Length: 441
Image 1 (cartoon, rainbow, N blue to C red):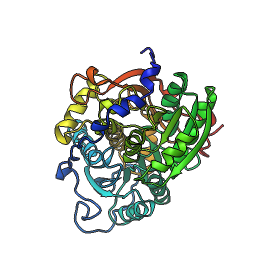
Image 2 (image 1 turned 90 degrees about the horizontal axis):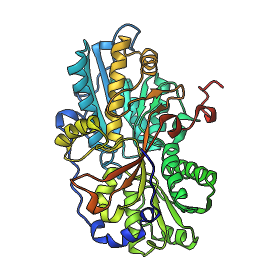
Image 3 (image 1 turned 60 degrees about the vertical axis):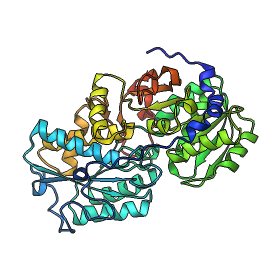
Image 4 (image 1 turned 135 degrees about the vertical axis):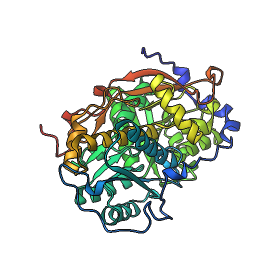
């Protein structure tokens, strides 16, 4: 697709000013997945009742105990619950059901789920409990970088697999990489490479960052800074806000005082949507441009097209991209009453690929499954040409999208124009720049 960028469209401030009413739009209540798909939460025992002794470790040539158990550890109650949460649990159950129907495996598949509350210590403790007492083979989703890194460490210690969909920091496949982890859906490098480059090319050549003060925010700020400078722009400064945040006014005013043309929002979820709302309330836009460096379709839905029209964002998935994405997304919508985010679509893709690898290996033993996963290309509705590298990064095409004007939207959730397909080999950090000890140079 040919890139056709419009400077006025990038500058979303005017739209934000006009859209205060939309900002106050009452959001639909998140739907809970089919109870059968969420047999456990942090407040209730996992499926199968009270903790039981762990099954023997997997051995090559067989599935331990005849059961593959998948743990979905996600944000079920906090600021990332819309973009991951119960929708990610549902996507996991859809993958399990589809795999059973298509592959007819000779092993059972069970799922447990829990709320990690975006806290690394809670995540690590739950991972140990699942691995040690519930015979969980793989823990997946893991939105929030701090939770992903905490669980990856436990999984490596226990020789178990992690599949990260929601977390974004490039540290996951660089300094913190492990040989038992796959980072599936996106990362901060791909976001910066898409949105950052597009905004600079449209004239947004001076930046100031409003950054969530934890590893994800730092990573997104650093990766975008590199892209801005590489394309001839300047970074005038940055301010970091607590995670999660509620009052962004003082940080936004600092950003405005810098005189930068672009205020880069290196945050996500309700931190991003609240930043956009408060920037409009304080009159910071349209004087300055806001660049949402990690925006999900759930954020656009919450803010409305009047507030977000013209914004550029980078995504790994859009429900209306082709017939395959529309078909799967319709099934998801019928159950969840919301279109899937890239995290939820990526979650299905990761779990399905994992289950296919277990069957191909004839085992749930970690090294055998990881070998099968890396040897098999990823080809499904989410990724047409995906592959898993030695650093654990699943590389696939990404998309530069522009939010439609209200009069361009023809149906509910008709929010994006895809302006550019960013090929897999350009979207993600090249292995030549990798800091992962597993990568041989």
